[in-house]
Length: 122
Image (cartoon, helix red, strand yellow):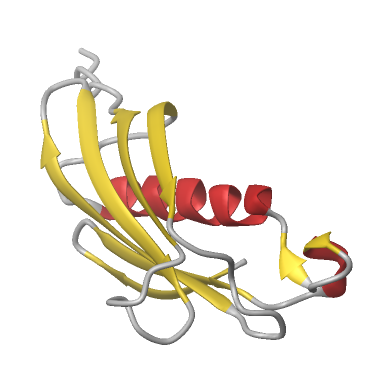
């Protein structure tokens, strides 16, 4: 996986097509776990890049809706946006796609931990 773009609370990541990641040898379709890992990583990256984030994050909840199989031979991208943060939880939405975000492979919504800002030591 690689980070393709990073902004305030947004991230784009990419995973190239690789035969080691095939879930169905007859069709060459990537395993769903690859899409899950990409979406989870992209969501966490979006949280960490959010200006309000002061420390590490971890996945609390991640819901993924698979809409179709990834096209064999094509890289898969993910776009994630951290759209809300509370003192302890960040909320994220994401989409996995090949070239067009409007033609998703899968969409995701998630909740991620947000570490509290550390207190200054005296």
